[in-house]
Image 1 (cartoon, rainbow, N blue to C red):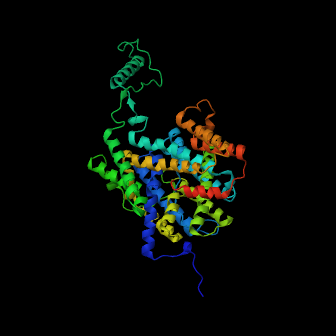
Image 2 (image 1 turned 45 degrees about the vertical axis):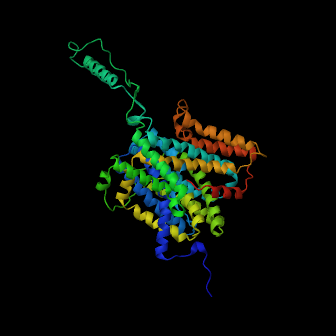
Image 3 (image 1 turned 120 degrees about the vertical axis):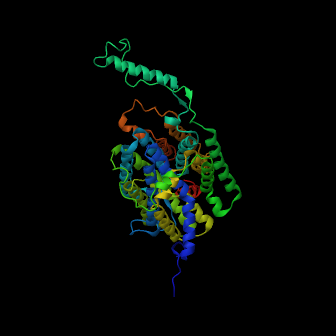
Length: 504
């Protein structure tokens, strides 16, 4: 007599397994490579280093997916069809760290914070799995909405240009810059030893830090060809999503980026020099970009992000349990959450970022009806192989930001829309206090976005903790919910919220 195999544990034929695994990879690919592009460019790393970030990210996505779907000992792995990828929840804090200290030194601080948060997350996993009652839909919906709104700034800047630096909207008038340079040289000559007789003595020394402000429109900002290509990318995504069906509709974002990239190449705005120079095969090594530096405040900041990520993962796992019909107990839930922490630890070691389950792939399980976890195991193997192909990573790094702009609006806007959809299920009629929770928390979350210098008179050590709107909104939503509603939330509400969260 043979024992029936649960659909989750069914081993499909190799050909079908590979095709379905590739489908999962394509669905999550655009979201997976977006984070290393955002953080790498915020750190002002070289194109070669950003390529390494992308390569390491794909490798770690595959490795952590294998641990989660296949399992590694009784302590790690939910053993459900789960795809692991970089969480957008950590982007805003990492960009804030990158802006405060760019370059390899800043990268070391980020990777140190990620490693520390990974270790803490592994230890906290059993506790977090019991914290669902503190994160009802009114809290998770608010947090996800603020994440999306905060990230929209990135997508908009991809289209028009970063507000500071070479692509700032306005630049210094070249005539004024030349005048200042002349004054500086005259002042330098006046104070040079032995130059008093020949240089104008009346020119004072130029004050340290003297600079001119931009008053002239920058031709590199908001260029019309760039806006047009971003618009084509956005329009392509919307048309594909409207008229395509099934798998093609699920990869509309990826197809929109490809269409925009082809147009940019034809217009001569994208080249493949870096792709040509990249190796065909190379292995990802630990600490290849930067040696981690462990800053306690930054570790606490990233750990708070990971608690929110694990709460979302908890709801996701419970939702996936319902979709697949495979019941999971507290022990399995903790094993799945430990992989969030272990994946984040692995990410820091290989110089990438925090990892979580990708909700769009959970949605794909429901759409296709294929429940086998070995499909995600196959997808993990494909991602590991992609992470060993530097040319693939160099191709992604070669994409101009305006090519990604239209897709960025969709990806990050979908995160905000997901939060709004979760909030739509909240009861406001019989509990008006929920309105206060949402209103105040979103307002507090917007402070760093609207007034980024609000913390200039506060102790510098706490800046990393309070310059992330996502963290401020998370803390506000949790505390206000406890104040108004207590801690009597129903875990079923969290499961239903997770089912609605089909965009990361």
